[in-house]
Image (cartoon, rainbow, N blue to C red):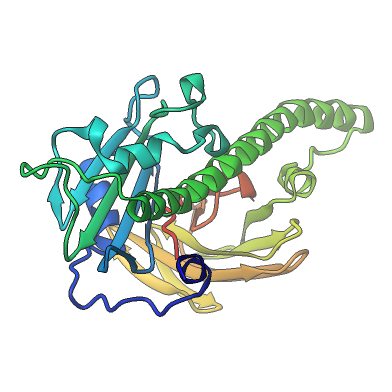
Length: 324
C-alpha cells in the first residue's frame, strides 16, 4: 500500500487554511530590498507531510549591486515569519545545498554546498503545522516531503535565471559584433565613396541587415514653416518584434499618421506608437511639425525590446522577468 500511494496521483489538499505570501509580493519585496537586474518567483502546488498541508514559494534575484565573490544570500520564512538563526540546520538550506548550481551558471566550490554569486534566494513555507527543529522556531526540520518541494521550487526559479543568463551572453556577443561592424564599415564606405567620387551612404540599414536587427531611421523633409518627419521601421530579423516607439519633440505637432498616443512632459511632446513587425516587414510613421528652420531631435526611444536588437534608437531598460 505504501508503494501504491507513492505512485497514485491524489487530489491536492485545500489551501484555504494556509497563508502564502504570493508571487507578486515576493517579487515586490525582493525588488524593494535589493538593486538587481533580474527577479523570478514561483509558487508550488500544495503538498502534504504527516497529514498536514503545506505550500512552498520561492524567489530569486540576480546581479545589480549584489556581491559576486560571496556566497548567495538565503532568506528563509515560515508562515510569513523570517527565520534568522540556525540557517545551517534548516531544511531550506539543506535543499539548496544539495542542488547542482553549476547547471544554473553559478559557481559551487567542491561541487556541493551553498553556491557563490550575486544571488538572493527567498523561500517561504506555509503550513498548518511547520515542523520546527526546536521550540525556538529558528529552523525547519528535515522532512523529506518539505525538502523535495523546496528543491523543486528553487529549481523552477533557478531555470529562469539560467535562461536569463544565457540570453544575456548571446546579446553581449551580438553587441560586440555590432561594435566591430560599426568600426570597420565606415572606413570601407569612406574609401569606396572617395574612389567612386560619390556621397557616402547611410550605413545604418546595412548594419541592421547584417545584424538582423530592427531598423529605426528618421528622415526630415518639407519647407517654409512646416516639416514632415518620416520614421522608417524595418525588421531584418527572423522573429516578430513587438515594442513601443517614443518620439520626443519640442515643436508644435500638426498631424501624425498613424495616430500616436501623445503625452506632454517637461516642455516636450512624447508620441508613442505600439509596433509589431514580422520578419522582413517594413512600416512608415509620419507626422508634421511647425518649424521654419532645421529641427533638432534626439534619437528615437524603443521600449520593451533589448538594446542589441535595435539599430538607430536608444532603448529603455527592459522589464524584469517574472515566471508566469
